Amino acid sequence: MFETIAIASIVVLAGFLQGLTGFGFGLIALPLLGLILPIKTVIPLVVMLAMGVCITLSIQLRASIRVRNIVILTIATLPGIPLGVFALKHISPHSISILLGVIMISFTAYQFIAKPALRELGLPSTITAGFLSGLLGGATGAGGPPVIIYSTLQPWSKDETKATLAFYFLITGLSIVATHAYSGLITSEVINYFTVSLPALAVGIFLGTFAYKHISDHGYRKLALVLVFLLGCMMVLKNV
Image 1 (tube, rainbow, N blue to C red):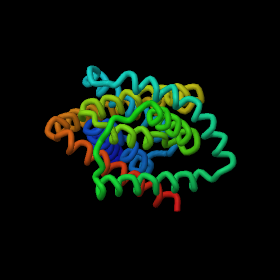
Image 2 (cartoon, helix red, strand yellow; image 1 turned 120 degrees about the vertical axis):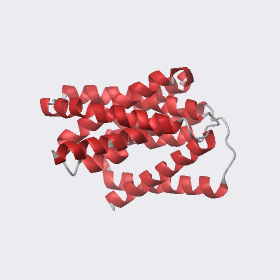
Image 3 (tube, rainbow, N blue to C red; image 1 turned 90 degrees about the vertical axis):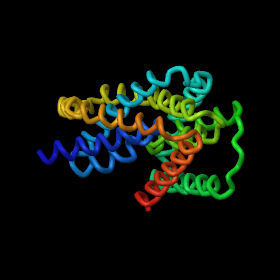
Image 4 (spheres, rainbow, N blue to C red; image 1 turned 45 degrees about the horizontal axis):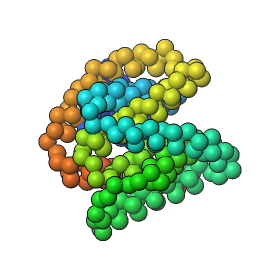
């Protein structure tokens, strides 16, 4: 009974965060669920639940998805993945994660202190963000930060930013789910936990999207930067 309540509470909280911002489900769910369930169960479970949020948000905000940016980001991500896997064989993933965390912390600190003007990022920046996302995804399994940073730098509305992030993570997440299924990681136990968690996920999404309606474009961007900062801190602390 305690396990069920704990899992439901974590899923509601994680669903709320991603329902609010379009990303961050794993930021809460992975470490907390890892305290209750085996990590081999937690990883595919979190990815599947996050996909549920991404599908919902992509449908809700489908008119705001920046399709051109998504296509370029996705294409640029693909060649980065095998290079990231190759780098993993020669460089410690802990070193890569610490470097990424330091970059994220430095980036957000600069944004809060200097407050640079937003400007539309061109094709080179889009390709770079997608490639780095693939590279880091292949090397560390955490490929989201480059795309999150790229999106928060754009002069987009909160709907455009959230929709684009949700759809990008939906595309990349589906490939991960397919890989997990092929590798046999999606077991009957994972499916059972996924099914049981769906009501809690629905509650979290509802609360997150409700809160999202009450924040401004500026408030959303500020919240996204705070989450990037916290994610960077977690990556450094976890790997030192």
